[in-house]
Structure formats: C-alpha cells, structure tokens
Length: 124
Image 1 (cartoon, one colour):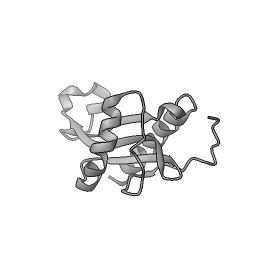
Image 2 (cartoon, rainbow, N blue to C red; image 1 turned 30 degrees about the vertical axis):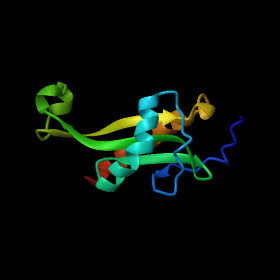
Image 3 (cartoon, rainbow, N blue to C red; image 1 turned 90 degrees about the horizontal axis):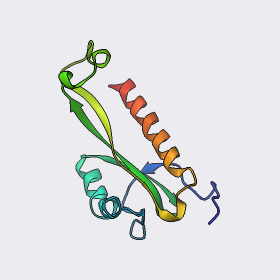
Image 4 (tube, rainbow, N blue to C red; image 1 turned 120 degrees about the horizontal axis):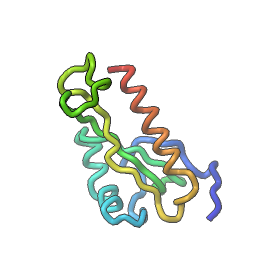
C-alpha cells in the first residue's frame, strides 16, 4: 500500500465515530488497549488519545497522560526551582497499524505529541 498523505487525517482526539476494530499493530497489548480502553479513558479524563485515520479507520495513535515525579527522582538541572512533585506529561502508548508501518507515521505521531506537550506547558 503506497502512502498517500492526502488520505491521512491530521492527528485528532479519539471519539466514538473512529473505527478501531481492524487496528493491528503487531503488539496485542497496544491493540487491545486501543479497542477496549482508549475511549473509556478519554471519557473519564484519565488520558487523551490522538489518532490519524484514513476516512474514519484508525491507522495510528498515541495517548498522553498527566503524571508526576518526586524531586529526588529528577536530575539536578531538572529539579532546580521546580515544585515537588514535578508535573510531567507521559506518552502512555504509541502504535501504528502494520499496513502503515515504515512510512513515517510513528515519527509524525511522536512529533505531534511533543508539540501538544509543549503547548500544554505554556498554558500551565
């Protein structure tokens, strides 16, 4: 399958209209989480899942969640002038459907996750 970037949506928040049933990354845990937990976590506010799609079929995703580390766990530079605990953003999961692997989608998802994290840091 050739990559036509015009087919792919920009990363967007997961919602009930996205089709996840056929998603197969080669990692059953990542597939199961997307199909059975991602939307529930989204609704509960536990994490935010972003997807890229062809039409409404999900071909890649990642999720972000808030977290924290104690100052003692952080390196010297990081802990300077920071609260305890130090707030962090965690990339909880990232996967690409096997049919779309090796086409730069994972790299694009990671880039999007970093940009969203930096934007959130500016607001906080």
